[in-house]
Amino acid sequence: MGMTIGEKILAAKCGKKFVEPGELIIADVDIVLANDITAPLAIKEFKNSGATRVFDRKKIVLVPDHFTPNKDIKSAEQAKILRDFANEQKLTHYYEQGQAGIEHVLLPEKGIVVSGDLVIGADSHTCTYGALGAFATGVGSTDVAFAMITGKAWFKVPTTIKFIYKGKLKKWVYSKDLILYTIGKIGVDGALYKIMEFAGPVISDLSVDARMTMSNMAIEAGGKAGIIEPDDITIEYMKKRAERKWKIFKSDKDAKYEKVIEFDCEKIEPQVACPHLPENTKSVSEVGKVLIDQAVIGSCTNGRIEDLKIAAKILKGKKVNSRVRCIIFPGTQNVYLQALKEGLVEIFIKAGCVVSPPTCGPCLGGHMGILAKGEVAISTTNRNFVGRMGHPESFVYLSSPAVAAASAIAGKIASPEDIL
Image 1: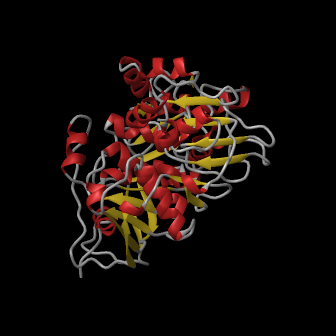
Image 2: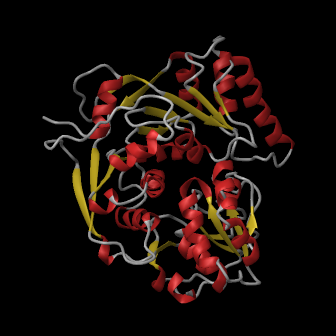
Image 3: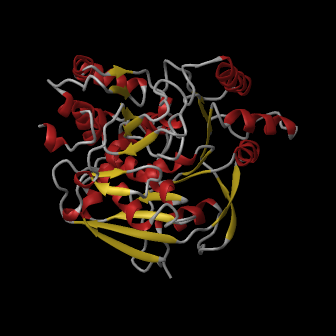
């Protein structure tokens, strides 16, 4: 019997020819990741264990991105723990502000993660790297501590659900709409501890930037991983960046899936996830009149250059509604610089937007865009839970950069077709 791409990676990393769902394994990891919220806990457990050296200083990645640039004394002290540990361990991959940005935009950009990798990160959106054909998943800080010491992690091999996207995308429909639509259909626990394998002609036509948006939100359906089979587009992306050799894994034709779900993309319109769950999706035309106070464009979901270009296309020559704060968060310094060189930053500022340094910022209710009681935001981020972006009585709607930009202009949730 064949294996899926996820099963093949896990088998390779635990030294077996074959693994099957439900099997418990100990596997070698290629990359161990943590940030300024989760790394301090892992570092504390690392030291409590009596360990003195990480298993491989080239395979540990620390990125302070959640509360940076430091918003207060506590966040500064959290970041300092990372800096001191990185210096003490002589870590190759430590990225301070000025060099870095949002971890899940940064690692692929730097070529730190490649196809065939097994990646664990103390952040739930580590699943982003599945877009490159890696098995990447979020874990707890104690798992990260164990991996920093041993280079290993344990897994229960998940079952796989295959999602096939057919047809042609309508105008103003992007990968964010596809993944919101998918979560709307299966629910926030529809892929609980399962591998989501995204496939079909529509996925094959997506850029790597767009694929990362899909994989990033696998966790919003409960997914353990969100994997896309590597192809020529993946390889071209890695050729320019990869710091290590990659290995291509593909699902066997006789691979066993828990189920296969097909979508006709020609029926999918721009999507909006209404409060307070990513599964509460509607077509933008069905949302009704929802006035907004804030529009957020960026994050590890939609903070790449392609996302900013989409927003700029709509904002060019327009003005943000006088009642709305529109905040743009480039994913990394390189994304910021490219946006600057291509004139996107000028478009944003002339439209009345605020352009932030790369940071997770308001996505987790961190800083630089916190909502007050009763305020409403539309955001290209990944979660809209109660209190996610600030006050527990605020409201967050999720969308693509196109819908978020159009809404910023309209002062209410709107389709790009309403603006252009």
